[in-house]
Length: 462
Image 1 (cartoon, one colour):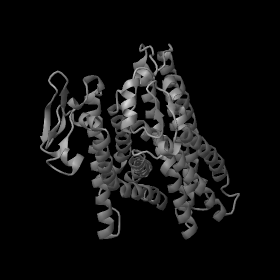
Image 2 (cartoon, rainbow, N blue to C red):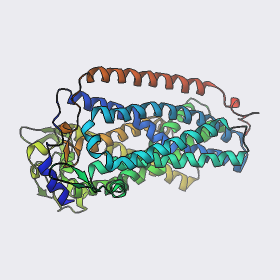
Image 3 (cartoon, rainbow, N blue to C red):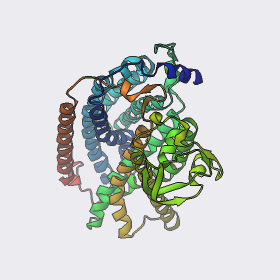
Image 4 (cartoon, rainbow, N blue to C red):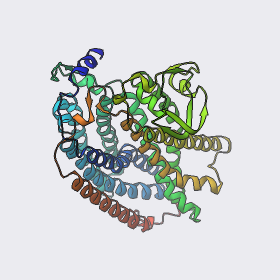
């Protein structure tokens, strides 16, 4: 790795000199596409498992409301999958159109990951169609088995994309000459880089949190309006239990991710805090504003030694500051990274506490909480979890700047010099807004149908 970085210092700037006129537009367009696509990834990871689990409850108990929920959720699943195909296709085009030097230089290194992602996508598309249209046409036990490939491909498809992002943060699996030529590509080493494992675990549990809280929130809203049927109760408690089990795990996984960043990308960690100089016993500032002119965080609540504890589990640990690299190698929008990081850990801590409270009530009283305030929080938890997940991606992507491939290729050396990006931005925005309105209309129309539409016979009596 050190050899690669040494070679990189000689070739930075030789990998392509692009017109910078539309760099900001390219970054904004890419960021907007990720914001629309990431929630669909969360549902692709977690929702098939929840749907199949609900169908399994039906096969075990024979209660009609479990089958009604599984069947209805499978329609939601295929709707979101279809939208994900559109947004994922747009993202694929953007990689090539917005970042041609990045794709041309490194395509051989991470091409295996994108190939596996495409293979997973085709298998998932086949089985999700059979699963949704197989209700009432395929024997029940055969039908539930068809859900297993959807669960697996939902994992493997996103796994390979996460691997590429991990590689961008920790580029390995190739040799780089002083002239910028990539050779001796080792795709499996690139795929399973040092950032792969913690990013994978962090994203997967985030997927279960986002999906679980959002689905539970819909039924919690109905619960607060007085709908106390078995259908609403199961629709709320199953995804809520999944999300509440995943939430505390995110604290552990976040600690793992933070210590890896401290070791491999210390400047990114310094950006989380706005730490100007390397020091032992580094503090952590809550809120406040980083002033670039004075390199200080002002109007903040300072907690002594906390950043050292987060980085090393040692209050006297040494944390590298922004001064450890030249000024032009530091992320520019430090306050964006700081607030994204604090938003992620603030919401994550609240949801983890909610998960612990929910589990404690179940353990002590063998029932869920009864307070209306808890279910009001459940309604809010879905959007909050979604905000936390997006904030997490802003933290890792903006915090890696100015590198698109860490310490090897700068963003300005990867961007296209083509014009027309403002038009592409607003065209993509129009597509995304149209998709959002269409999906909302479809899901609202689906939700208005009574559960008896999904199964023969009365559901409430179950």
